[in-house]
Length: 92
Image 1 (spheres, one colour):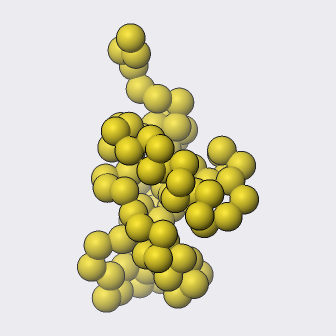
Image 2 (spheres, rainbow, N blue to C red; image 1 turned 90 degrees about the horizontal axis):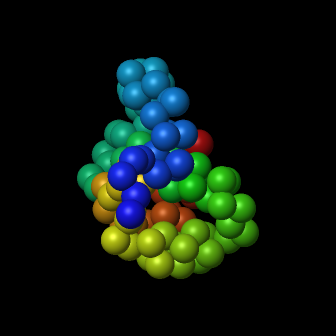
């Protein structure tokens, strides 16, 4: 049984939350955002890169398969496919 953190959570801990939030504030990344903030988008895209996913549907399917472990990966809540595509289309 796993007693420690997942490897993905360990990699996320290397990113300074303070510096990330400072960048989001500087560029107003969370302006008029209700649920899917920049932090969740960053974690989803980081998961995408590390697991070598090829499409948004592939990302969503893989995250959905890990539904019980998503919170422990650092992602607060499973995001829908349309929200993920809309966020990536609207944000830099």
